[in-house]
Length: 173
Image (cartoon, rainbow, N blue to C red):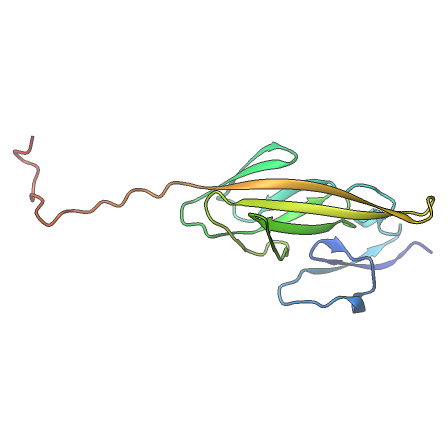
């Protein structure tokens, strides 16, 4: 029908222009999807005003995710963890995803590693620019944000044996 055709998602964003307008980099996630309802049937509803982040899925099953509410998570990771990978789920994939670690933007690619340290804050921002065709094509920006606090398990203390330590504890009080 007249609302059907092929659409493209680049790093979980349903692009709003032709593919020739985008440069693809090594590691980018590209999905070709067929729509029968101008994108709304594949999660990219251009008439929607939602930029809501519905979930953040971490790829490592050892990570413990504590979700306090829709906008704040705690991520408990094993000691020695230096990177995390995740995929952002959205209510509307017409939104653009940006990721920041301690305020500095990093490239978001679904399930690709991002370097982290203990007590870092990962901020995920979803931004939707909605054009209102009933109001002179006025553009309104909608956003949603999730903050994730990274907590590493404590490293066990390293025990060292002094050179002058006794061979046995016998007779030591």
